[in-house]
Image 1 (cartoon, helix red, strand yellow):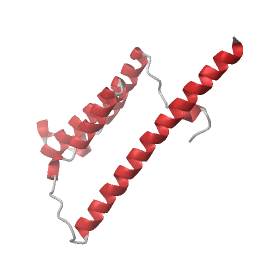
Image 2 (tube, rainbow, N blue to C red):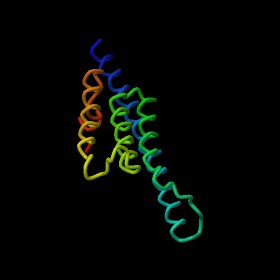
Image 3 (cartoon, rainbow, N blue to C red):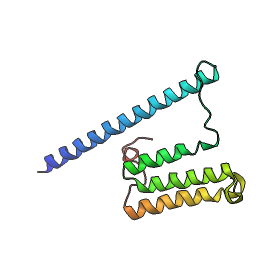
Image 4 (cartoon, one colour):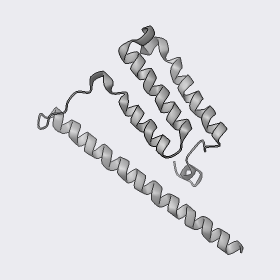
Length: 132
């Protein structure tokens, strides 16, 4: 029985590694495409509409990805960070980057608490296997 348990673990590890590699490839190609688009916009070859002060929406997209992966601690962190950036951009309640930076600590702390309560891992497993 012992060898089977070891092979099952090895199979799970391999599946996890393949999934992690796919995610890295997707993010890498996404960043390449985005960077190319920005470069072509700067060179005047394509037009990119300005998102202006709505750029914190990017963090809401990241939060949605975390929700889809059932990582609610990370999702909460990104939602609170997005709210903080929106508050600073639009001056809600007189907040700006200089007087409201402690909210970043609140966002990170809230995410850590949710991860601890839910039993979510604090770091990705691949770091434990020698990754950096």
